[in-house]
Length: 216
Ligand code: G6P
Ligand code: MG
Image 1 (cartoon, rainbow, N blue to C red):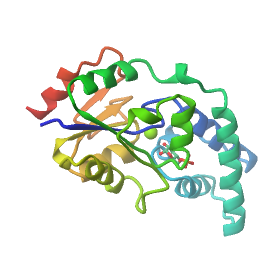
Image 2 (cartoon, rainbow, N blue to C red):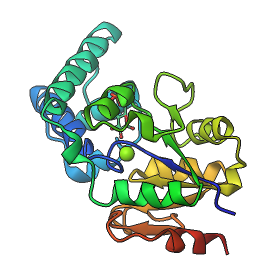
Image 3 (tube, rainbow, N blue to C red):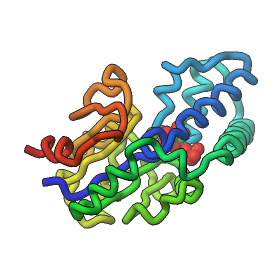
């Protein structure tokens, strides 16, 4: 029985995924190689330092720990600059309406993100108070595809994992939800998000009944 919805942030609630990609791509370019959209899919849902490791592997570049820390900090600074232009208007279409349906049906709402910037981003889009719990990159020890992020969210909300739906745009995030025993709804391309219980292109016109049907 559906009792809670756990939302990923980047690429689900707001399109910050494009800013993460732009910032990583320019870092790769600085290092002398490119980062394709396909390669970028591997970075979604993955922590900052793990993302950097994946990128360095793609470019076959080896750096010492100090340089890696500096590059990750630079990427984050660039990312946050890009995020400056964001306003509440940038919440992805249909997200607020869908959450209104959840509130009306007394279904709890939580956030499960690998980002250490999650609260900052939520403040930009004026959605901090929309979530009964926020699990972000500052709280977790094991990133997606480990289920910790979402299990913590379920625990905070006082619901069983099997009574939760997770909305995710990342392959690692869908795996995390499945590993936690939750229903996984992919937001994006069905070809990329294989393994989801359902894939939607967005929240526009998504009715709660469609999600509840996954529990029958
Ligand atoms: C999300 C994004 C990833 C990002 C990660 C860490 O999961 O999908 O692309 O690397 O958060 O974000 P942060 O803001 O802490 O660098
Ligand atoms: Mg995401």
